[in-house]
Amino acid sequence: MIKGLLALLLLPLLIAGCGGPKKQETAPPPSAPPPEAAPAEIPKGDPAAGKGEFIMYCSACHGPDAKGMPNLGKNLITSQFFGSKTDAELIDYVKVGRPISDPLNTTGVPMPPKGGNPALTDQEIADIIAYIHTIRP
Image 1 (cartoon, rainbow, N blue to C red):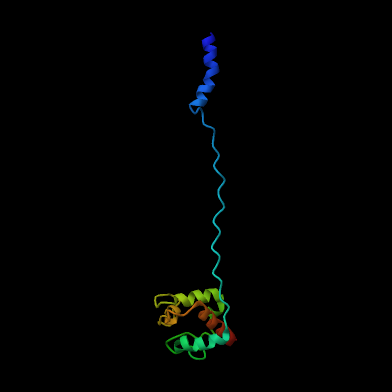
Image 2: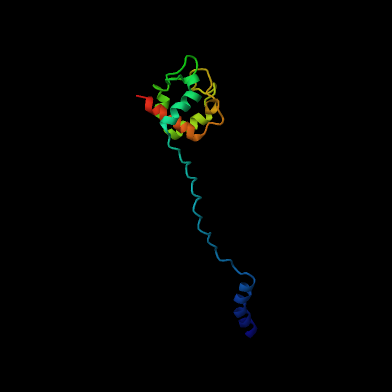
């Protein structure tokens, strides 16, 4: 009987020493989601600089007055597309351009990325957009 009592007393120690029943582990709290990347800051456009840049980079297709050239670039003065976009969206659009295959291309002429000038900077694009805003009604 003493052996039985001793075994009964030692049983919990043996179970604990062998790992015994596992406690239900709680999962660590989920870590906070990574912060979203801050949107790139949009450069403030300079309309005075934008006028010269527009003439240099855009007027061949959109005309020196931004009213478009036949069978080339759209009229930017009356463009609903231009008027409906934020400056950030317009910068992104100019950087990508519009291929002929784009359903929104109604001229059948592609607008190459950055107007065909890969060296065009975001600042220059912002300047051009600022200039166009000043000549639109």
